[in-house]
Image (tube, rainbow, N blue to C red; front, top):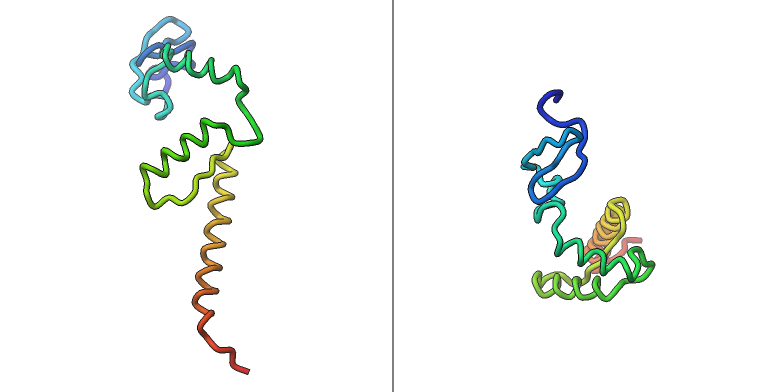
Length: 118
């Protein structure tokens, strides 16, 4: 909306956004949930910088992913497996494949006890 929201943001610090005219705005949107801890958080920036030194996009799982997966399985006892993917498209495709495999397994279980009519 013209006049209410800035046309663009130069940077964020803490819970504020600063526009090209150095006007500060309190960010109630929190970067759509991605910045719940604020912008420019030194602790988070240092952790990210340290992690980036080891690379940021690997073809194989990292020990951080394995630790996170184990923690998720501890927190949610019915979870049997955890898979991290790089994009939402990959996640959607994986969910579709899992749903299809589950549906097929249901059909096979339902038909396992039936005798074929000839």
